[in-house]
Length: 322
Image 1 (cartoon, rainbow, N blue to C red):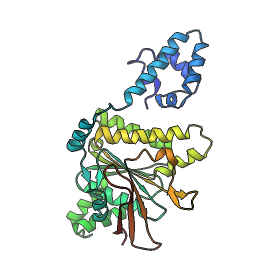
Image 2 (image 1 turned 135 degrees about the vertical axis):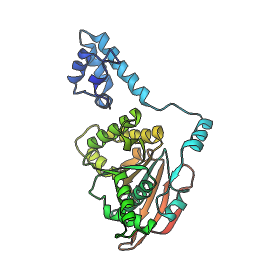
Image 3 (image 1 turned 180 degrees about the vertical axis):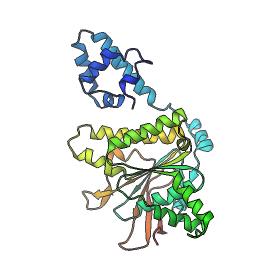
């Protein structure tokens, strides 16, 4: 989110004195402010000589944050929005597309849940290849060094009779790879920086590639968030919810498909369950569970959550591996 010193011109209450007050509480941006104890901030402001103006500045920041939330829509407006804008993109796998009503829906956050080697990254790479082939840009946040140009080449080859010696097919592959912008990401703060940069570029219409972004992939979201939930960071839960809100905001405001992956953990009953806990499960619009027998070339996919389909619906023998 915006640094406080960039707001002074538009919001005079966020002046240098207010910024010095905030800096004394390690608040340098709107995001820092969001993570702070607001009641404690009001109390601290009350003890200052310029308490009235400081309190006004705090209220000003709260109003800025409120303005970031998308407007409420009634049912008829939601239906019309879905009809006009929320199309689907194929994942490149017929079995998955058939299960979820045609593919990944624009404007929604879809989560792939599954244990290691279940096929989550395969679906991400396949989806990225398919979307990029249709002259759209893909932002791929790679948290585990799992992005593979070789796998992209394989998927393009499957769908276009790619032959390594053919110049036209090599050009097609190069164009697809050029449209997939991959960023290695190693912590949640780096992810926030990239997402805010993308949001600003989309809003200001700068960056030729950003204007055509139709798919945003985070593989995996849980590897970024789990350390801050387990570690000493007291704002871990708030950062997790903020990340979910930002991803959904990008999807809704800019008609982007967002695809994230999540690992599984052991539950109290001995069965595995999605990581990140109860608070996160309300964030994705769609949650899909992937599983695969050890060494198998096919996987099973079932719906955990879907706004238009019953939970538990399953596609079996989905071939993702060769």
